[in-house]
Image (tube, rainbow, N blue to C red):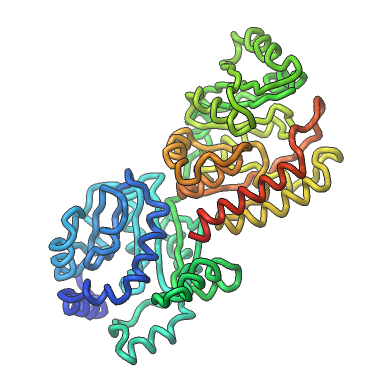
Length: 477
């Protein structure tokens, strides 16, 4: 492959600075550690990670994954990387012609796309190193900082570097789209990239996370994944499903849950979990299991603890389907809507499908006024926390792959057992797993049997406490 003049200039630059590059980078260790810490929030120990343009390897070395690979087109940089970080596999390789015969869970571009000769060609080149769940994470500087960076070079604090591509987040997203990827989350970090005691801590931990101020941060991050283009006939029977139905004082709805549930997916497993009912819900569940044993695969259980979250965990522990679904036994989320959730996740449109009751007009008595206001408030909070639009955080119907749920369990220690409802546990867990979260609007119906189990004030304050707790884990850390 013929090397362009610009690429030759960049190669000569990095070969020339390689011998003392690690020492030079130590000057910016505060900045570099912030990037590593942020990446490690989304990278797990079991992930295989590839860094494109790894330089001397300090970033890929800092990631907690055990299976790490770095490539760079500068032989001198790779020579230094191999000498210092022996646990990483390093290769001299052009990003436009990757010869690695391996697929990775995470592919990272850390402040490198500005030097690439053709960004779209590189994005296209990594497709063969992606499986359907691969995550591409790109960091690049915010061009609002261009004058300050140029000033740093002028006064000698920062090394002069070859001219970089001028790419904002929209440009990068467009190039990803043209190369077969979709961007599903963006974020900005770091108001002060140097360590000024107390001041940098306050600015970067708190001010940098606030709306509007965040747009001034130095680093911008984009998260992308490969497009999945499944045909309808491939999706229809691609996966099996487990439908968990937590039920407390819902005797009059149990049979309707079976009768109204459409047939979809390769196989359906229905799991009723009864929880501390004062009516005959448990007896009704046993009766329905026996009545429909020849036509439906029904499992039943009684929860040992309290709360919907505990019931869902018990049901999911019994589940064997590829996809896990929650259907509230009050049937205010119509069972007839579940095929839409299946199609959304099975076709690859999202990896965590969250029902939203706040789009379509509701039945008159479906949701009380204060509950509606509370849900709209929490939708704003969640959209800010999770960096993806979340219209309705408390809709009972949430859908994810069982494989991802098992990973969520392994990561649950990060947040702890803090959520009696289960909605926050799943949403925050999905964010930590770096899943694409999609809202799916439903028509919320008035319940036809029984009374709500939600106390608007007691549970509202509990939700506020959980949001505050999660903000400390997700935003202000």
